[in-house]
Length: 139
Image 1 (cartoon, rainbow, N blue to C red):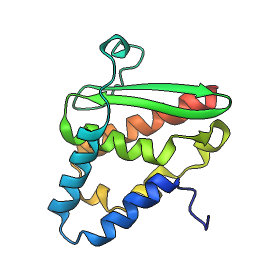
Image 2 (image 1 turned 60 degrees about the vertical axis):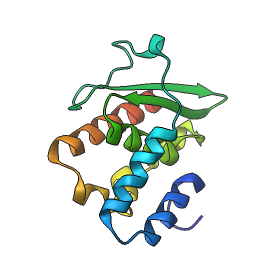
Image 3 (image 1 turned 180 degrees about the vertical axis):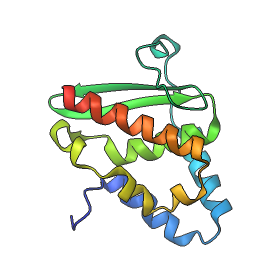
């Protein structure tokens, strides 16, 4: 891996985005990623997994197994489900001690997402990243 800390799954998204010139196509791709993601079990949609600071309802369910970080998530907003899928590509399967080293905003900037997200959505993404990094740091 070069200077990027990104996971291969995230690099695949970066590569796909390079072929999509139109922001609308990129937006659709993010939505499709969200639709392709398995729904979070309703039993996991509890206050402990709910992320505050998001305009829509968001739940993140982190799991650390053998020092490897993973999380599942869900949202009632289709674009946010897609953003969760992007973050899963960025963080899932990392050693838990590497999660805090990921500069999520620098990685996401490679997709140009922040230029097209409302301030409210950006705050929601920030809240999700904070939750992921706080959970990993506490492990």
